[in-house]
Amino acid sequence: MTMDHTIVNGRPWFDRDGARIQAHAGAIIFEDDTFYWYGENKDHTTGKGRIWTWGIRCYSSKDLASWKDLGLIIPPVLDDRRSPLHPTRRIDRPHILRNPRTGKYVCWLKENGKNARFHVLVADSLLGPYELVRQDWKPGGRVAGDFDLAQDPETGTATLMYCSEWEGVFCSPLTDDYLDVTGEWSVSHTGLHPPYSREGVTMFERQGRRYVLTSGMSGYVPNPSQVDVADDWQGPFTALGDPHVDDASSSSFNSQISQVFKHPKKDDLYIALADRWVPDYVMTRERYEWLSRTIASHYDKSVKSSLRDTLQLLRTPLMGKANTSLSEYIWLPLRFENGEVRIDWKSEWSIDDYA
Image (cartoon, rainbow, N blue to C red; front, side, top):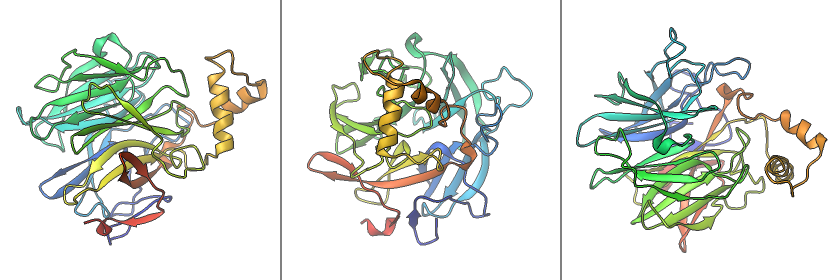
């Protein structure tokens, strides 16, 4: 990214010191006239070992274009393999909210794997240090999946929404301290199986309407997105389809969204922050049709695929096989038109173009 507030997609991004930015599946918080971008530090995750995430790294910027590395705000725990922060534990998708009642910064982390669960940390400062206050937790007894936290800026109330394998997408308000759920559950997107079951849950609010963006479920291989809208986080939701306009790749422009960030100084600029997890694995419509058919055949016997399809699937960069230290970022503005949400491909665009 350059110094003139321009976002350039489709190439690696570097911080002010020339190092590759490592803030994957992350989000932005705006405080004291400064943008803070945090996410998974993948600089040790080459796909050849067991290291999943080497802590949570944070960057600061005044313009969303030039980023200063602030280091690891949640460092890995190296001397205890039982710690959820050990690099071999599959921690990802951090989300941080400042609780206006307690003054604490609350960070939720998801751990992947057979027994996927949540971990919750708190700190007095956004930059830490963070203390682990809850671990190995499954709200409602369900396996934890990709999630997001939404906060009402007026009331300070917050909401958790997460997918649970292919059971559906579950939603519940958080307790006043943001450390638990109230247990008032709603569920959507049920009755689906991979690759059509939903993950990559991302929430945002605009003009009193609640929007949820999700991706399909195919590991690090990208797939089409879907946007749904409701008057309340508990639903019911109306499906608006894939927001990615003219996406010939059937892959959300070869990316997966982790946050929709409302620019605090622009009237109506919402930015979809996404990861291009495997830049060298370029998705096409034909490749997606083959991939989705092959994955679906494992769950639906009416869908047929060949042994060759299955062997080819094993060679794709699915979970644990990708060199995510080389993952890139795709940031694109949202467009709202006639009740629809649209995301157009822009290889380069300027924040200054928005009022």
